[in-house]
Length: 234
Length: 301
Image 1 (tube, one colour):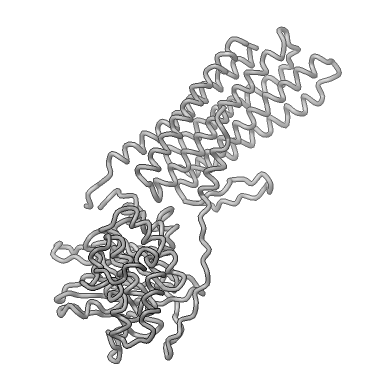
Image 2: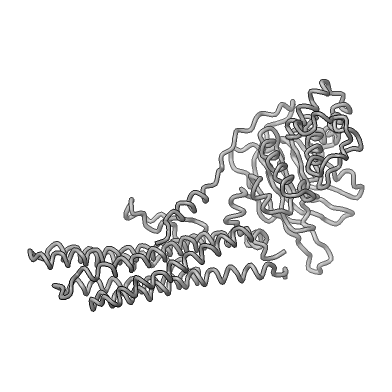
C-alpha cells in the first residue's frame, strides 16, 4: 500500500469543511428564532436575530480567510480544489441566508403592535420556514455524505416552498380593502420572499455537492429556462 | 453584510484560458502527416505517436506499454513519482537511450509518422531535430558565443553569427549577454546557463525541445523566466517536459501524462506505466483515475 502523505493538510481541509458546514447550523438556529419572532411578533427576539447575524458574518470571514491561506500555502488541486471552491460558494450562500433572516427580523416591528393577522397566511409562512429548516439540514447531510441524489432532492423540496409562496401571494392579493391589513399582507410577502430565497440558497448548496462529486458545475434548474434540468443523472 | 464581490471574483478566477494559436507547418520532406490516436483529440496534429512503447534496461522493463500522442506546438508534461520512467520515456524521443548499451526499445515511437527506431534513421539527425535540455545546466567550457555556435558549426550551417543572435534572442538572453559574448559561459548564473543551453538547443532549428527537469536546479525567479520562455517557444516548437514540480506542469503545459511505478507480485521488478493522459486542466481539476487524483493532491507518493 502506498504511504499516506500530507496528513496535516488533509486535517486542515477536513476542519475547514466542518467549520464551513457548521455555518448551516448557525443559519438554522437563526431561522428558527426568526420564525418564532414572526409567529409571536416578538420584537425582542427579532433584535437578537439581527445582532446574532454577526456570528454568521464572522464565520464567513473566518472560512474565507482559511480558504485563502490553503490556496496560498497548499496549492490544492483536483477534488481538494473543487471542495474548496464549493465551500466558498456554500459559505456565500450561508451568509446570504443569514441576511434573509435579518431582513425578515427587520420588518417584524413594521407589522405594528396589534397587527391584523391573517392566520392562513401566517400558517403558510411558518410552513415555508419549517421547510427551509428541513432543506438546510438535508443540504448539510448531502454535502457531508457527498450524496448527489439527496442534493438533487432539494429541488423537489424547494418546489413546496415555491408553491406556498405563490399561495401567500394569492392571499395577499385577495386580502380586501382594509388599509392596515393590506400593509400587513405586503409586509408578510416580504417575509415569504425572503424564505423563498433561503430555499433557493439551499438548492445552490446542493448544486455544489454535485460539483464536488462529479466535477460538473451545472444548475439543477435553470431559472431562465424553467423545466430543463441540465445536470445529467449520476 | 459581507461583500457579494467574492462570488464574482471566484467566477473570474475560474475562467481558464484554453485557446492557442494554430500549429505552423514544419517542412520535413518525405515525412507523412502526423496522425492522431490514443488519447489525442480528433483534428489535432501530433509530432510523436507512441504505440505500446516498452523500454528495457538489461532485459528489465523501465516503462511498459506506453501509448500516447504528443501534439505539435504544445507543451506536454510528464509527471509521476521517482522511478516511474518519465526520464526514460523522454529520452526515447530523441534516442538518447541508444547511448546506454543495455537499453532496448519495443513498440513504436513514430515521429511525424516515421518510426524513430527504423533501420535507416540516423540518430544524429534525430537529435538535431529533437533537442534536449537537461536538469543541470551543462554549458561547454567555452565562450557564450561558442556554446551557441557549436551546433551550427558542427552541422556546417551558414550564417553562424546570425543564428547565434537569433537563438540568444529567442532564449530571452540576448540583452543580458550581447556585450560579453566572448566571456566564458561558466561565469553566468545558473538560470542564465540554462537559458544558454536552450539557446544552444534552438540554434540548430529543431522541431522539438525535450526538457528533463529543466528548472529543478534553479531559483523561483529563474524558473519563472524559463517558464515564460517555454510559453513563447511553443509557438515555434513542440515541447516535452519532465517535471517533479506539479505546479510547474499545471502552469505551463497543455497536456499532462501521469505515470506510476508498478510492482510485480513478488515486488522484485518495478516499471513505469502510463495511468492517465489528458488536457492539463482536466488532470488538475477533475482527473479520471483515482491514482492520478491521489498523486496530484499529494495524498500518496
